[in-house]
Image (tube, rainbow, N blue to C red):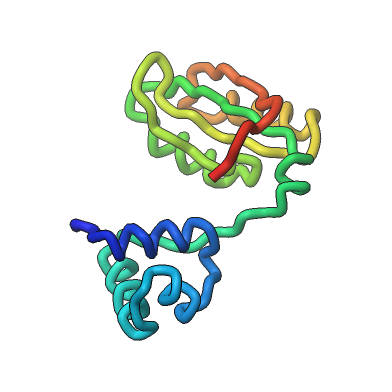
Length: 143
């Protein structure tokens, strides 16, 4: 699906505040509320917008201990590893990647011991051959 300038502007406004009212979004993109509502429905229906998510206050995010966990997956075990990772609440994101490792999990926990236990659980998942973790020390910027 091709997105025009209005669609792009609408998506940019939603990235900043996914809970913005239709009237506010209409003002931001210079279109009527009805037009914006129709575009949102179309973007949702066609799968461009797959959902809306929660962003926590910086104080909560900054207090968490986070890591990138690189995961080497055994052949034909990607689905099993994905399902197991999805069930682990500390895994916030899971990406399929190219290179030596097959996936990168973004894990987050309240403290180092909880993060350590989560990383251990990732390593013990059926289908995981090995992991390599990098603890995030600071976030330079977030969008």
